[in-house]
Length: 89
Image 1 (cartoon, helix red, strand yellow):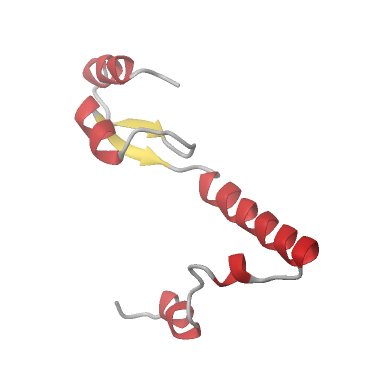
Image 2: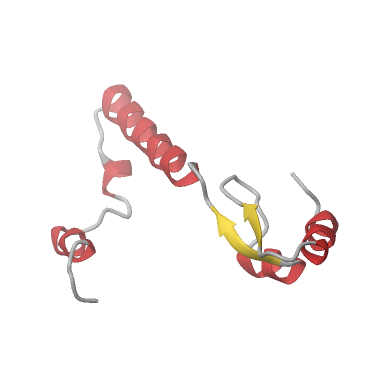
């Protein structure tokens, strides 16, 4: 990981917006990165890795304990899912 000082130095040396990767645990917040000079923040494959980690925890609980609590925590309703595909906000 680059230090915030390195990010600030690089951002100051570039004539283009600086993109910073923050798709990992412990990454600085968007506000901290912006203060250091980042103008674009990428999550890369972080969301996919997180989703697959959740699937693994669901499977471990289901197969190991016969329970499904992890799956139900934070689950979107059918209406919320449909809303993700709506043409209007």
